[in-house]
Image (tube, rainbow, N blue to C red; front, top):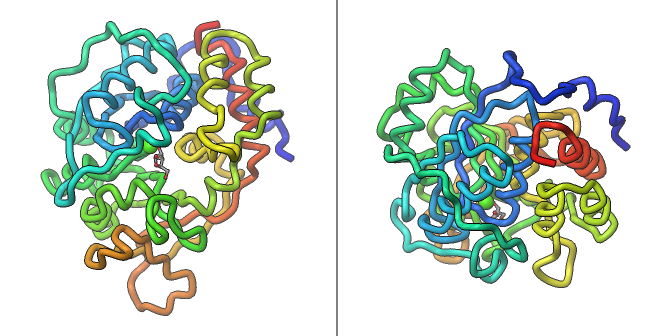
Length: 326
Ligand code: BDR
Ligand code: CA
């Protein structure tokens, strides 16, 4: 069990701007769990969301960017810069996941159409500009969808590799195998060539695979605890946590934000990760060299274990705080 007092240590009493906040860019394809991740970030004063950049993934880009804006508005943050990035993978035909995320991409949650404007600049260019303008290694890149925007940014501006503090991504699988094919997880399978560029880029990567996120399940009891917090954001999150199928849903993307807020909830190892881009059967498989038998260099920290109850305790704590509309 997590000690909640450990989280309180980070909290601010009045929701005012935290001058020592960690700056993040959220690259995302909302998406049910993306929405929860964004709301968790907005509810956490140790994080300063510099931009939300949409990518095609769970839904087409026109839907993911509109959902990103609607979620920022729900979180009371219509001032956040939201950009549209790439509308299709680098090479392969697009895939989407309406079967899981529903026709709107937000499952059972119905939100008003957003009124805040989409920023005009392309999301990849905006990301590059933000990385170049910020002090070196001061910005954390959070990737919650296919890695198309991330790959395009490092192709276009290789200099930003040295400027990124950390890239924390939800994607891939090891012993858990796949959720989209028997071998591959959705975000990597959706754009394996982008993933290959990213894992070979030299970026400081932390990868949160299905092996971790499948341990973090929104059981009825956990959803009830969130719903009981009251307020529009907690109510919306409770809707988002509702199961899409027979089993409690896995809380994939919020693990990225939880890792930034409470890294002690997670454990992992520094290893080599290679991406399968040739085989039709295993396209997008993440080949994780746990034993170092390949001779390939370490290119990522891959998380393996998580304190799931601690993640939900963190979510509850943030959703009951004063940094979100109540
Ligand atoms: C990932 O795929 C998407 O459907 C989710 O939003 C998450 O990013 C899980 O495999
Ligand atoms: Ca996602």
